[in-house]
Image 1 (tube, one colour):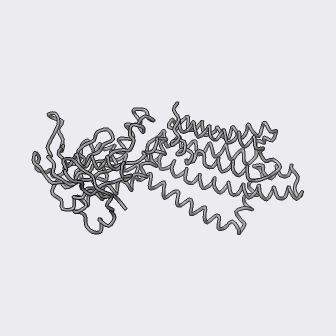
Image 2 (cartoon, one colour; image 1 turned 60 degrees about the vertical axis):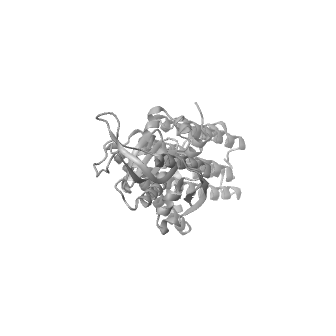
Image 3 (tube, helix red, strand yellow; image 1 turned 90 degrees about the vertical axis):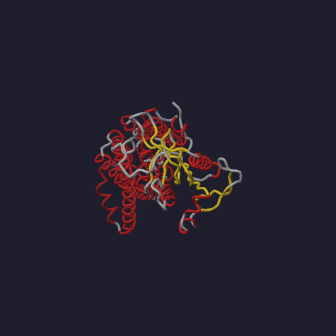
Length: 419
């Protein structure tokens, strides 16, 4: 199977590995009588990398995501057994297996079941679980430091050291930990951390539900009836063209069905922001989306088109989080071009299957600006005619990036991007 470095990094940042990495680093930094030797730490690191690699390749399958979560705990048990220091009831051992089971279970559920209730429960439990594990890591770190110091002073025997790290000693030592005044600030920080995690998860879930609802109702295929412009005539509009950057490479990492699923989520988000800003999606081809603003002669069409683009770019991280949560590669980025000009709008298509379609130079220019985003390293480019129609408050958010020769033009014209 093909391995992708970017997907590896994304998987590394998910719940499935970061706590294990923290645990391995903690074992490496704290000297003690039962510390892992360098060779043991290297073996642990190899198991961590193996787990992340397998999750990067096959983590979209619920059962495999659950099973692969146990690779590093199994590696830790193996290293301890080879060193003759494996204790089944050791807190560290049980922590790794418990965290792997908890995270693997809820991640697998969030992939396997797409219902809103299960999705919300899984996201909430993962956020709360991360806080619990974070608190345990700090507690375990504090306990090992104090026990190692006592062992070094000969105030504690090796047998006593291991007994203090046994799970049966956990209730008493943890109560002592949380009751200490010096940990009050830490508890407050953990609570804030939990709140931020939950808020972020709610934001991602809210966006996901809005996209799912929009797509599930098939509103792009059967839009809500709205007033129509005079068709078959040239009209002045604002045209927005958008593409996914390197979509061919992105799609090559997915099966056909999952690529279609990603595209439908992408289309739905565009449908959501276009409708919000009084635009209409008039063309979808592959990863390209064409939207028109001002079909009914709105004086604020330029403002609405720019606001829709900004709204989409602001919501894009949420869509990317949604894809990561589903073990899909995140979109690398989106390019958007906006131009003002005259087009011809008409009901195009086969008899009985016609819907509004547009053509004209303005469409080609918007598409050209879209492709120029890569050259200017911008997410959004607008033409000078669009810039002139914006209010001063919106204009100050843009900077002139240079001049380009557009379709049928004889002189270069300015283009603008976000500051």
